[in-house]
Length: 534
Ligand SMILES: Cc1cc2nc3c(=O)[nH]c(=O)nc-3n(C[C@H](O)[C@H](O)[C@H](O)COP(=O)(O)OP(=O)(O)OC[C@H]3O[C@@H](n4cnc5c(N)ncnc54)[C@H](O)[C@@H]3O)c2cc1C
Image (cartoon, rainbow, N blue to C red):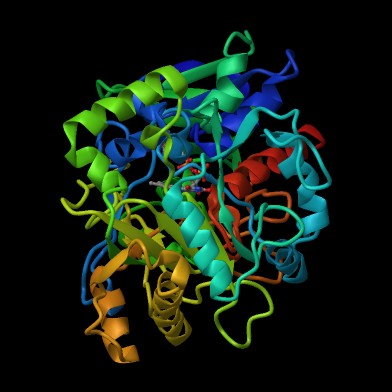
């Protein structure tokens, strides 16, 4: 196999975390960095227009288009799982919402044995990456590469926020500030109305660096391991030819929550019994690889709207569609700048919760499934998810062939708490939309529909219609040595193997209480610091 060079660091995957690590390591011109990405460069126009995710998430040339195995608690439905396969990874196709979670999420990580991951310790990394349009303060930075902007207010969003207030929630102007609780507009990762993916933020400005090589359309197939030390990787180009590349210091796995455990298992790192079953030689028995999968499960309520002011209406009317296009091209405003939720709220729904346990994404359009066409009637959506799910799933290889997708079993709603919270979430949506501020828009509840009222009926609706909100984490969990299922230590080094780190969403020991892109970028910042100071 032809060797195509030696680098100090080889980073696998140019997603939210991988782009950050590549940027920070290559800032020193003496450090030679290779970043390998399976997908193409991010040239497609729909990767730049915010609303473009509706098109890109189901485009097989930009997304892995995974699917879970039949989910036992979802009436055996398989759930479609898009993941970005392009420079920028999932940050190039995501819903753009910028949230960090709660201080308590990170303090919990520290309490379970991960020193240095409490909120006070991670906050400087959030601030470092951020270019906050409102300027810097105690919680925000304004000098970083990642542009964080305000959304344009809209009539329905304003009314939703007022309704949430009428339902008893405080108004919150900044979900990433002093407190998360309340209703308001989300902030988004855009710059002047254009998506600011991790690739646009962290790679585009530095692509001229001579010590940074970026390979696109190369699939990393395995790690090269000699006496428990990773010395390089094997990769395959689009013609199927295989190459090797050497890493003098370290290999960094940033392939995301599905592919990082896949690459570990393909390389012989994982549960010994499982690897032998699929014909992979065991290099290191590490039982936690691929376990601990967690995701936010969203249940969407759809409400018919009395007035033709939803995005559904814009798309149904050719004149309004043209106006939306013109508005975007000349003013970078209007419906084309919409994210996966304009307004929203974080609420304490369970009586025992001390901090918000449920998030609503209020969406000014409706569809049967994200990425599919919009409904041909005026409608808006209130999508709820329980923020700290207890169900745990798994991701594992079923073959030693790197081109065979791993088997994903999310196990949604297998914990009774998650079932209860799905029902409570649906009731929260109903309660907010029933407030006086929404009366002028509310026509009827399309889904679940007013005929469904009992807990059993609402739970069945969740089983039949709920799905991912695209936040899988935890499959290469960080944890102390006493935790047999920990895959990496608190400096993100793979336990029992030298010169290998995992730096991406998969290291989260527990899912944070919000959307995951900003936290993964923080993990990239912190991970790069570990490498540079080692
Ligand atoms: C449709 C969608 C909507 C979302 N909406 C939001 C949102 O609004 N707000 C938010 O905060 N979060 C959102 N998220 C989640 C967020 O984007 C992710 O949590 C985050 O991007 C994950 O970052 P990562 O670095 O772990 O993985 P990724 O960004 O997925 O990066 C992994 C990269 O590795 C590459 N790769 C994988 N295997 C290989 C291989 N073998 N060889 C080479 N390269 C490989 C992939 O192609 C990919 O580019 C959304 C995600 C999706 C998919």
